[in-house]
Every structure is written in structure tokens, then in C-alpha cells.
Length: 233
Image 1 (tube, rainbow, N blue to C red):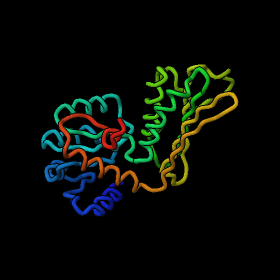
Image 2: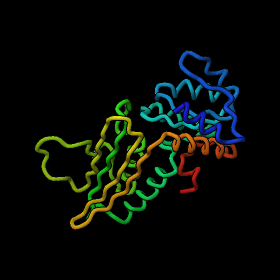
Image 3: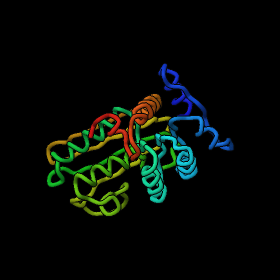
Image 4: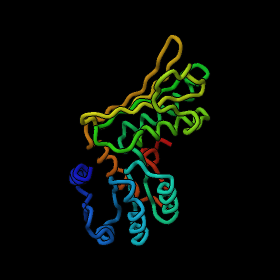
């Protein structure tokens, strides 16, 4: 993703990569050279990143997923002092999927439709479900008044009995070099409605992150997501 972001920045004549950072390098010096930092790393890197960004007053675009509750809380706290875009996915198509899922859940209610979410990524991805799938579940939980921990079923095995009325199924697939596939299925007796997005290149995420960084330059302190960047809220 780092190389993809550099390539996306090079495609924008008014965007300059001031610095890059990798393990073992001086983080504070790199951040001090930039107006905005785009982060696609590991969740364990978030806390030192926030500390350095706060010290330098640098805007952040965070695309890393798999954060713990404490790390998420730290991001929310930091956004009280600096502008941050924090999103599980920077693809325009995926954010359209988020928007469509929200509105579909309002029409295709659980009184009639059962809801399932399926995601697939490459075999090297370490968090499950993906950050994008987790966002889809959060949208569905909000619209159906369900709870992630109580009502989301992560796969099924054995003699588990019939499907629970408020249950939302979550299925994670891993293999090959799949960049990212996500589907939301609303299934009722006699019909099925499916929303699907498939990414074939990381470039779509990188260009979206550049778009978010440019948008963030004109924003006041606060926490934003890609829905804000695209004007979908």
C-alpha cells in the first residue's frame, strides 16, 4: 500500500511526498516534514503515530484496520486536537456500498429479510473480519438495532438449530491474492437482494486516500471518515 500511495501521489501534479517511514527510521522527523500523513501499517503502530502527529500538529489519514478498542479510543481522543480521517476503506466504490447497505437495511427489514455478510481477502491478511466488513456490520447493527457481540454469527458449525430472527451472519474467506471482495445479502422467502463490491487493484484505495488527504487540508479539528470526504452523509 505504501508504494501504491506513492504512485497515486505522483499522478497528482500538486501533491508532493515529503517523506516516507519504515521500521527503524526516525518517525518524528518524517512527520515534521508533512502537512498530512497517510497511514497504511499495523494497528500496533497507531499509538506512536498519534503521539508524533499531535506533537507536530500534523493531519492524519488512517487506513490501518484491526485496531483494539483502546487504540480506537486513542484515535477519537487525538481528533479533539487535530483533523483525522479514519476509515476502513478508501475506495469510492466501497463507500457507495456502505451508503447502499444503509438504505437497503431500512427497506429490507429483518421482519422478512435475513442478512448475511461475506468478505474475501488474500492469504496474508491478518485481521478478520476485515475492517470493511466490520464497517458493514456496524451499519447493519445500527439500522437493525442489533448488537455486534450478541447478534453477529461468525460462521456456523455443527447442529446449531434454526437461524435466529435477529441474527446477522458474517463469513470470512482467505486465499490467493484477492485484493478485497465484499457482499451483503438480504434473503427472504421467494427473493434475494445482493450488494457486492470487488477490488482488483490497491490503486483504488491509494487514490481515495490521496483524495481524503487533500480534502482534509480545509477541515477543522475533528474525526471524519470517507463518507464525509465524498459528501455521502
